[in-house]
Image (cartoon, rainbow, N blue to C red; front, side):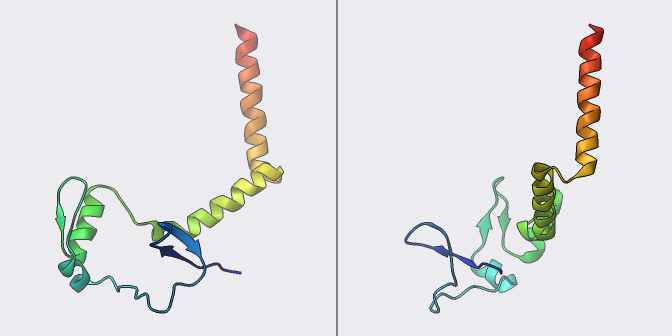
Length: 107
């Protein structure tokens, strides 16, 4: 079951549950950027989608929505690692331990 979260201004953090009906979520378009331009960390004024995209590309940045599937896959890999069901990681760990022991034995 999917969970939904929204930002609660009074608490100052994300909370679980749907947003109240009177809260409007802005659609991010060029009009949104033009109405509320913002300054990036290096002082660049960003007032359009194109400028935002170019700034992100120039500095090698991305938005978190690019990692939605990546985070889920990595969470599964971590779970299998901690449960000991990931054979590839087990074999890599065995090789790493054997190599470290061999290096220590040579000194």
